[in-house]
Image (cartoon, rainbow, N blue to C red; front, side, top):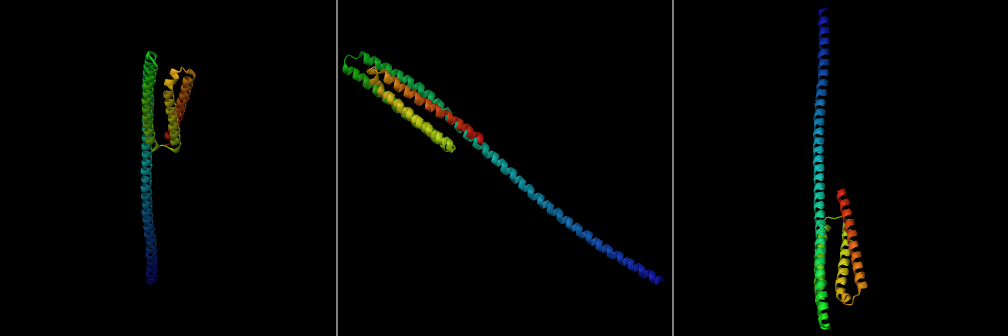
Length: 228
C-alpha cells in the first residue's frame, strides 16, 4: 500500500514538475517575446521620432528660406521703386528748370538780335542746349534700365514682361521728349503754337503710359510677394 502511495506521489510530483517546467518555459517564451516586442516598439518609436524631428527641421528650413526669399524680394522691389520715384521727381524738376532757363535765354537773345545772323545764333545756342538735355535724358534712361536688369534676376516672368513694357514706354517718352526739344527752337521762331501743343500732348500721353505700366508693375510685385 505504501509502495502504491509512494508511486502515486512520485507520479503526481513528476506531473507537477513537468507542468511547472512547461508553464515556466511558456512564461519565459512570452517574456522573451514581450521583450522583443518592446525593443521593436522602442526602435519604431525612435525611428519615427527621428523622422518627425527631420520633418520639423525641413519645415523650419523651408519657412526660413521662404522668409529670406520674401524679405530679399521685398527689399529689392522697394529699393527699385524708391529709386524710380526719386529719379522721376528729380529728373522732372531738373528738366523743367533747365528747359525754362533755355527758353528764357533763347527768347531774350532772339528778341534782342539785330539781324538774321543774331537770330540764327540764338537758335543754334538753343539747339545745342536742347541736345545736352537729350543726352542727359538718354543717360538717365540707361540708369533706369540698369536698375530693371537687377530686378530681372529675382522677378517672375509676369514681372519681367511688365518691366519690358515699362522700358518701352520710357523709350517712347524719351523719343517724344527729344522730338519736342529738337523741334522747339524753330516752332518758337515760327510761332507754331499748334505743333508745340501737339508735341506737348504726345509727351503727356507717353507720360501717362509710363505711369500706367508703373502702377501695374507695383500691383504684380505685390501679388508675387503674397504668393511666397
